[in-house]
Length: 352
Image (cartoon, rainbow, N blue to C red; front, side, top):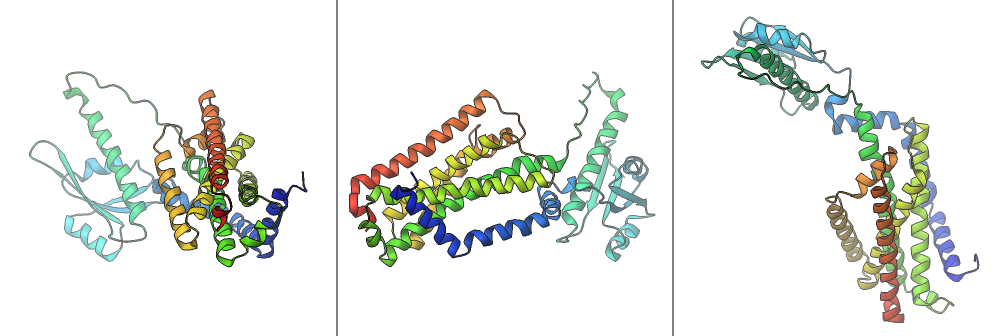
């Protein structure tokens, strides 16, 4: 089997990548990223869910004739350190000096309501976190006001279920980070296929391959094999690094099979684009646009790739989930067979 010309060509492609130090550089980047993974995850979670980063407190100034009611709620909010000021002007002056991060102006309206006007910094590094903490405080104040006025309702309101104590790191890791790390190697593999074929055609070295025992379909097979094999290997390394950093991933064989299927599908797409449009820049543009369009459309499906990966990773997959995996595998095989049919039909003209 190892002497099969297609396997030999795939090994040549992998050695070529190694000679260019691409694989070594990728591994070094992985180790560098892994060394700072905890800091990166905290930073990414702060963008994914700003309120999920604990230990952040907002200094707030409270003023107005309804300040006492508002302070009764804010005093129970660990994320807001509220202080009452004599007047709105005093609160505004403290905000201008930078003494506080936000101001709350609470006043009674004519309709027996409490109106709260909030001021936060504009285009400041802390603005996003401040807005999230202020939003949560206002929601708590609204709940307290509804509860205090329940006797004015004609019917008793339904009680809310307890809020689940979930960690934002858990949601981010399994719904964003794991799908990204499993899908990115597949997309890179397709880009490598495009570069490999277009460079061979552009440099004229494809003629040397055509005099080998390989058929045109065999040459494309070798190129695809090299790209497809890299994707699950890279994904397995990422999953191992996640496990070392305390994020275990379940159903790893199924996830690697899914990555291989995606790599086969997008690499086949890249090969088709490279054969139909051998100019490198145009081929890369068409490939990138096509992959983004297909992935965007697939993300709208109930069994989208990120959703399927997340369900497998947290070990909550159902029979339907494994059926979706089988469907993606069939899609990858179908894309590969379609490219082979294209090359076989065009013959030697496909590689010119």
